[in-house]
Image (spheres, rainbow, N blue to C red):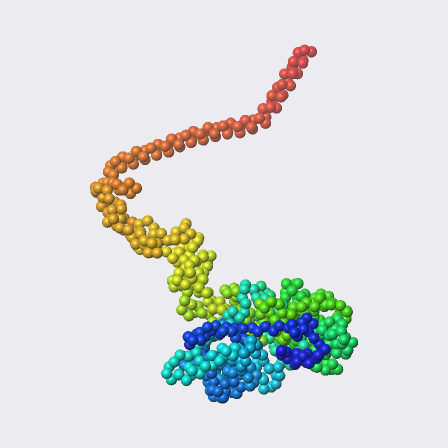
Length: 637
């Protein structure tokens, strides 16, 4: 299953074994997508297909297309289709069905893509469980097309493939009669778990840069995806963890040159020689040490709440410390760490002693998590990307990976980076997605998400709308009347405005006094014709919008509260009486207030004068008392 030269050399080196699982217990999980047949009716139903490990699976999306099957001579897709361009009669995208066998899976997809196919289904040739179609291990120059495959591919079972082949052949033969096409829907929306608003993903990689195109692919991915990754992590949208595969050396080989050159901690953690030559270039132990250093960079950066610095370190290390330039050294690593402000002393402490005959906590953890848990299989391929505990299938390319990560968010919680035009199609732009919309205020219940659209009543300026989102939404709560009048009736005539929305009510519409209706539509009540007012004798009634005008004959006055007319002179006498009483009360209150004021002022002035005089009067009294005493004393003498 190895994807690069280093992996193949590992497979050949029999003295290296995976530390945590034997071959017998290894689990390789086949990731799947759904294929639903829409027509003909006889084939309708849902089937599973195994996602290929190359190309670009449309995670979070789906594709509806017409199944076409090539001529018998080209049915396996191993030869170019020449000038043939596959097109459907209905204009739908073409899903080309090809037979398994004869050449690499990836070559079939490439030839189909060149002939206009939007997706490829490979029909298995044996009755067996689905397997993952992988890219060729031998990356020779004639395999350069691998990087250019952009359409998705999947393997289907023999039984399903036979049924599709028969139906597609029949449809092609009957095309002149206008019979229906074989229409299927490829659906990747549930291929990636999306349980919550945070995506957890891990990248299994290698610091080695001498393993050919696969190493170059990993380095290019880190450089290209670094910006996206850091935005996701800084915003708290994603939790990223890097991982590195290690092997161990069996006890019988601990003293061999191979083990000493490729392992640390006395054979516990090993990596293959980068060049495949123990007497040239760098050794496998150098790779293990740098892998460990990069793991510790992430741990130290994460402890400083800056886990995204791992991307900066790895990208810079590849550029500044390559094996090709003979700079794959600790000193170069120190320079990179220093330039990023990372404390090298903490990184060294995390790495521990590579010469010790003891376990290394960091690398031991890597060997444990390398084994598949739950729905995730063992990690046996480099590079491997695991998103929400599911192994990503497809090309390791920035946009493709970002699409897969975006498919891992709970619907409607995707960050903005997932909703950019280059990432997805805004389905709300087409007929508002079939959702409710208020054209007057341009408020809509259509909310675009990465996997499509949802119809959900919105919150606008703090005001919540409620409804089914498809046919109606209504503002509720405080402030609702400011939002399209709460969906209630409102009208203005001759400078007067009436509304059926009241901010004192948290919901509902009620026609105001003078109007009748359900609150969504209100009409004026004719109080005159309906004898609801101004029905007293000698009254004349004239209806107005929202009210009425009632006049009495002669000099009588209309009292609205009593709906009656009273004589004007009585009203005048009564009015004068009331006025006289009011004025009398006011005058009385004024006089009383003035008297009270004068009394209070007089007492206040008296107290002030007494306070001032008290400063002098006591002295005079005392002197008088002393004088009298002296006189009395003289008389006695």
